[in-house]
Length: 459
Ligand SMILES: Cc1ncc(COP(=O)(O)O)c(C=O)c1O
Image (cartoon, rainbow, N blue to C red; front, side, top):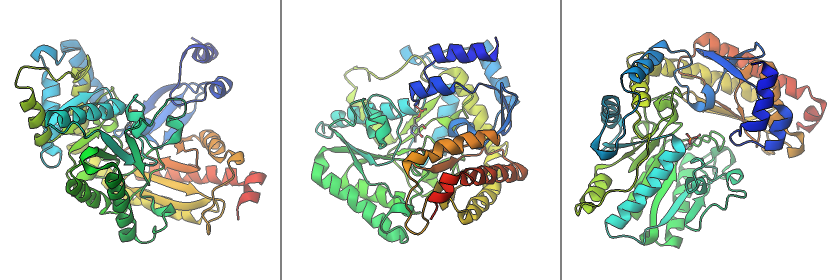
């Protein structure tokens, strides 16, 4: 089928995620044809450097033949197995055991989902079930961070702290609350990590106090906020939040959909912070995007409470047709092998300092106010005035211009609406691919700065 036919069919029939429908009709789709390592190829013949791992998920890079092989083998042997009626499949059982083995603390129980939003929704449902089961049915309030992202399910989207995901969707619900983001660059105590941590913990304590600790079920947070603009709290923040949650008698859910599987260094960001959450939610790097799958890990304590409450024979009424899908699980096992034995985690750790240097060097650029990074997750925050941290006027539509110029320079990264640029190169990146990333990024920033109205806006 010709490219133009496809573009027209796309306009007429395919709904795109988080997109302005009319704007998309005007701009049309960019059709991706194939991927190889760190590169994507589109139907216009462009070879694009993917500096975002798809949607921060293809942590292995594209074209990993061993993943394709295990998927094909699993498909021909057993393409589907339900987990209803006591059935299961070997890859799902082995993957659950491996995740439990590597997860911190007693997070020994794995429920497989279709992706991140489903992991969040499952966590909310199991938490609700748990508190009802242990005789604390009044614990129904949920707290999360402003600028947090927890997907777009009908309940989970209310925990997301980004207004774009609320408009016309009637969330947050009355039992969903937010506290300020621990955002070093824009926090009043940003230069003082201890003060920022104390202020964030105080916000949580105040919120729980206002709602009544007996009414609060859980606090949800990403160890590093991804879609909110790669906001990296100071080291020690997650631990202080863990201690506050324990003290307040509320559960801590670490949403590691982005931060796990080597994206920030180790398999789990929580482990790097020496923190054991009550629940961890996963997706993305679990299968490196080669097939859909998420997971929710919960502690012995939650598992046993739910198990004991079901003694009269009642089922726990949560499950889906595709939970623990054997093909996704087989892919997950191979992806995990590539991270560990295949050296991808080690390569990520090796090249992360080069990634950091490249970002930090761009602080000198007239458009850049802040550069931040952990592992292979990073961001540049663009400002009109470095001294006051004043953002560019929204009428300049800087993010959209950057996205367009980046494509012309054959590099893909994420330009968020508030002029934050997000980067998540695959763990297979070489030093020369990182050099190319920064070469094309600099070209892009310089090209946008050459626009006369942008140049005039820089203080
Ligand atoms: C931290 C976090 N949680 C949840 C989600 C939702 O995951 P999905 O898009 O797979 O539903 C995302 C997606 O980007 C995420 O970054």
